[in-house]
Image (tube, rainbow, N blue to C red; front, side, top):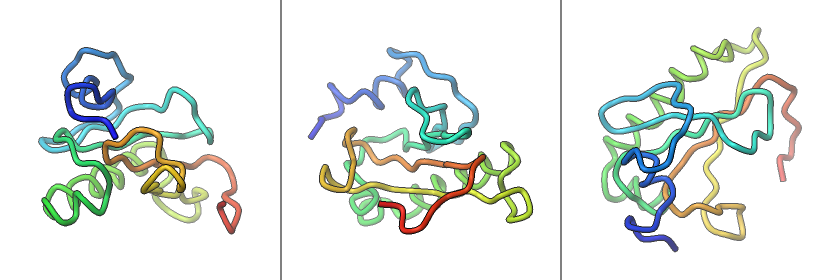
Length: 120
């Protein structure tokens, strides 16, 4: 599990690693995924380091609300906000077994193609 000094997302927040930023707020940042799994794939992260969505919810519920609000704004900006546009999915993976590979809380805004169920 990455500590803030070695965390790739903390380095993106700090400007050490470039990213294609599509939206931001005081507490969160949204940028295009380098390995998109859908036509629209944007990661939404907190500026502060929290390991996963559960840790964020326990430590700072207001930051979690801000992160989700930014994800909704990204979906709207990308034309995915309503069902008639195809909708979108907001996914949080928690733990390596669930597919989390960067241990800094992040949501995936996915859209632009039909989403299958079950997802896994």
